Amino acid sequence: MKFSGRTRCYAVLGHPIGHSLSPVMHNASFQSLGLDAVYLAFDVEPSRLIEVLRAVQDMGFGGVNLTVPLKQVAFEGLERLDQSARALGAVNTVRFLPNRELEGYNTDGDGFIRAIEEAFGRSVAGLSVFVLGCGGAGRAVAITCAVQGARRLALSDIEPGRASRVAGDITQISREIEILVVPAESDSWKAASVAAELMVQATPLGMKTDDPVLLGADAFCRGQMVYDLIYMYPETALLKAARQSGARTANGLGMLLHQGAKAFTIWTGRQPDVEAMRKALEIEVYAHQRGKKRGQRQKTQKNMW
Image (cartoon, rainbow, N blue to C red; front, side):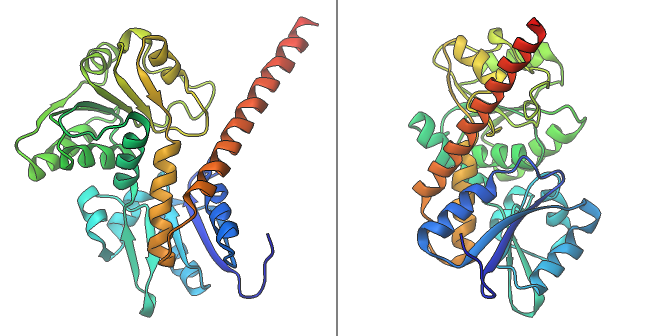
């Protein structure tokens, strides 16, 4: 990849940001399309987000993505919001407009729907869904499921009141859907998971290899669909447990891909090379998994001696 004085910069901002694979997929698309552009990643503290957005706009950036914990900060701090951001209550994509205006979008909902259709061959319409984790991404998933016609929605989060707030917002959208707020305890999570046709894991637990496993194999059943928003591993511990119980599973790579593809179009007005993006992501994730296994083997051999 070559750079010049005309290279257009794009970025993802988060805190922390080292886990993000957004640069991998966007740079693959830029290269495939022959665009003089580069996508970077920056760690930004929430209190400085709006200041940083103004700065990168002044530097000529083409647009940015936002990840945890900045989505809600942007929603509350930006004056101009697209309907997608207003509906989902969070911003994951920022477009820079003339006169230093910043416009917030949310592509998570569309990315999730495309990913579910791709992974399981059906929409969420008519399904019973359990969403565990109601932060920025989980909130977007829950509201999107309601808008897309899910039959029943169970919500839970370890932060008191967060799931209730999302449930309240959903009742303003649709009074026909059945909504249940599930207590933040393992037995309640297990019951809600087993009862759901689609279980969505939307917490950050699982991003680190030593994170506790939220649900065991007894929380899943044969034929059930289980989607984990975590994307940096081919199979998280939760997905492994679900697969062992006969559930159909998928990680968050598809959602990352499709939300990113929509952001690409918002910024550039062009369709990205989705297959180049997908291939780059898969190479990165499976290479990471091979490296992880190699490290485990080396550790085991060291312990043997």
